Each structure stands twice: as C-alpha cells, then as structure tokens.
Length: 78
Image 1: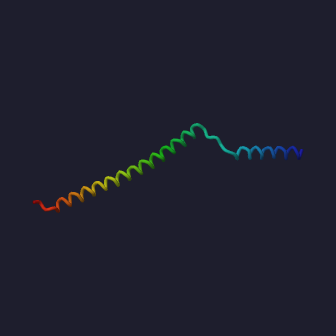
Image 2: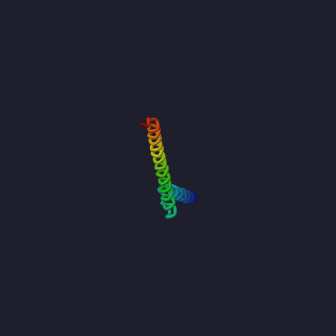
C-alpha cells in the first residue's frame, strides 16, 4: 500500500514536471499577435528614423537658403 501511494505520488510529480518544463508551442493567435507586434514596433522605429532624417534635411535646406538670401542682401547693387 505504501509503495502504491509513493508510486502514485511520483507519477503525479513526474506529470507536473513534464507539463511545466520544455518549450511551449504557440497557438496561431499568439503567433499572429507576435508577428503584428514585431511589425508595428519595426514600422514605428522606421517612421521615427525617417521623420528625424526628413526634419534634419529640411533644416539644412532652410538654413542654406537663409544664408544664400542673407549673402545676396549684403551684396551691393551696382
């Protein structure tokens, strides 16, 4: 009787150990959610980078045009 109880307890512990360790497969919904999350994070990073690049280029163009106009206005007219 004692061996049967210990055997049942050992099987229960083994079953719990087997169910709690090892890689878990993701469901289709979890895979889709992970893909969408990665896509959205990547898109946000790219949009931020492109916005910063565009802002920097715009600032350079405006500064260059301002300097050109300032130089022209200081040139004496003949």
